[in-house]
Length: 268
Ligand SMILES: [Zn+2]
Image (cartoon, rainbow, N blue to C red; front, side, top):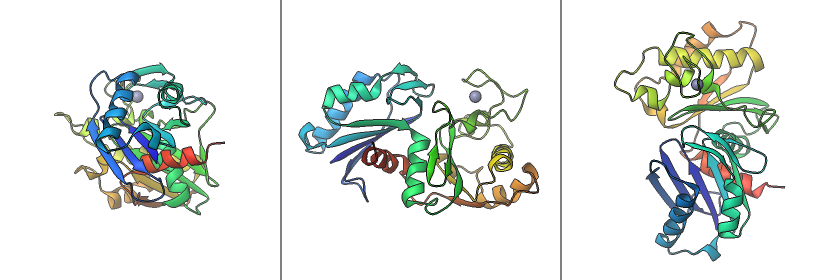
């Protein structure tokens, strides 16, 4: 059994199965404040026991994390989780004695979309996950583009309003301070979220002219989001010479978990 873990901004999800279709087991819980890697490992053991499974049943672990991740599966920075420089893949390998991959959540989600989802057979796509925060990945010729150091995932930190509210990243007016699950569930939810998202996607369109834009994430269920209105806004924020992309939403609720399992299977 592959154990897939999605370390998100607000929740931790764990799934067990062969990673090819529906999961045999699923666990979802709010991420405890101040959770450490040791706490995560203890939780994994508890969840496995709850499934009637043991460590001997696990063939590998794939982790999707809301984080910048280095080439060794170490968490470089994860503001939403509160981690910095945590060698997560190594710690999990030592704890469970199985192959482990750790990858940025949007890179996992995009890998799933490229292999089995909305980007399958598509030459170029922008994948954007609108959840607690907002992240993105580029899919080019079936490959997920990680950038020079794994940081090409932060469309949520594109500055949309130069004089906007401060962001935890240190800048102000970032997309995620306007059009994210966290911003829009706050008491003083800022207006103009759909326009802000259109501006960010329009900028990306002007740069890369993707065939498709694939949206995923829990915040798409919030009242501010409207896919058709978003599609109608895109021409206002992109160069008229680029072809308008096909704007779709992910077919599955758990692209991160599925992508983490794929990443484990495709590891070199
Ligand atoms: Zn920011």
